[in-house]
Length: 215
Length: 281
Ligand SMILES: Nc1ncnc2c1ncn2[C@@H]1O[C@H](COP(=O)(O)OP(=O)(O)OP(=O)(O)O)[C@@H](O)[C@H]1O
Ligand SMILES: [Mg+2]
Image (cartoon, rainbow over all chains, first blue to last red; front, side, top):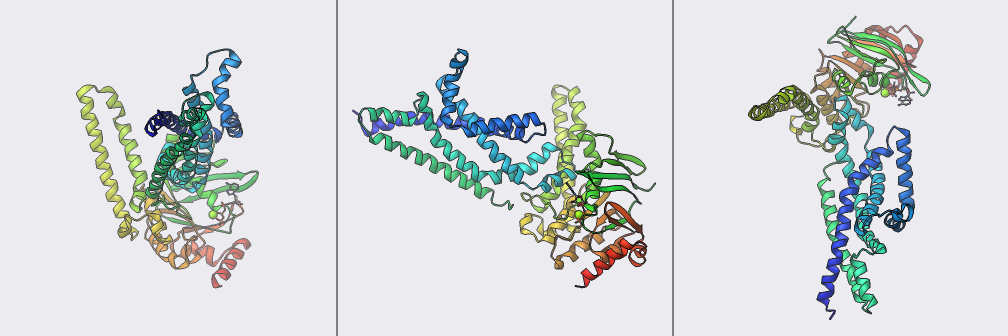
């Protein structure tokens, strides 16, 4: 008996995977993106080129392809056991999103006027103090809107995990479709909408909190 | 050699010489005004003095001691100590937009206090163990608290000095340009630099706001100041010495009355005449 309640429970379970992929990607990609930014802005040319090439490749190819490469790649190329399914998804998403985030950070850092860091430097601040006490908050203020966009995209990108058979919410719904039940697939939309709704409120709240900074 | 002695500053940007062998002296407590046409290298000179640029060549002596030499590369810590000897007030203020007036003033002194206290306790903390360590930690906290309180009192005094006590908790965006520049001056003074530099402190301001900023600077008489300015009347009034800089060289120098009333060089005469006409418009 595929009652509404049963479907909801099954979808919720799939949605758990969705949330796990989402959360893990954010937790790792947000700091990793910063490292990529520093690399791609480095004065050491080889590092800068390497980082920019990686960013170009990652942003220039479909995430779906990257997923497949990371899951099947190790076995196909070197004949070794690669990642399990869920870790593979998370690795692919983290790398992909770190690269997107890094470009947002870079634009943010370049957008903070040079005079800000110089004013800090003249006041005898160390480089790290300039970053954490002056640049960072102005950077955050600048990147909240583009980051919001990217994070909302991530919510929906998680559905790509089904490509390597991770049972996130869409895959669960597709099982029902195979049994001739269409409506669960559309019902998943409600989950996404609620999730994105909560995120939107959160971002709006953050923007309000930062409104006192006029730049 | 005077209190401040600058020797042989040279600076190139992409092959063009912007500073060509700059030498000058400034006694303690005196005011030096630097005037000259746009692109003459005035800002570059101040930036070199403040370690925002490294000159290609040149030395700075302060109080009889070599402070910096372009040929020597300093560690971040050394540079920071040297940097603190100088202060710079920018043409466009560069207040920190996320901090209130008083927080703008307090940021650097508090961070400095934190680092200095930490440094002071580092060795002793390493040696101490157990309970002794705990006491030391407490002592460290108290030392920092005391310094922060002193900094705060000093910052409030400075705000009062620039006439902005009631704007203590305002953000830069809530202040007029003149008020912002006065906070920026207080911020620079908070670290008690030996030499305070101003880069056209009023040229980003509406004419009716320049007066309040000039008044604050005027009241700093007795400190060692270097003021780059296009306000000829002000330069003549407050300066003890005047440098006329053009094309990266000091073309003429002397007491204000000498330079302004009896300029010797053609370039100086032409510049002063130009400024006069500009002023009359
Ligand atoms: N970072 C830089 N890179 C390249 N050229 C520079 C740089 N900074 C300054 N210059 C050049 O150096 C010359 C001197 O500039 P500077 O800003 O020191 O002049 P200034 O006397 O302060 O002029 P103004 O009165 O317009 O402020 C100018 O020709 C300028 O274009
Ligand atoms: Mg200038």
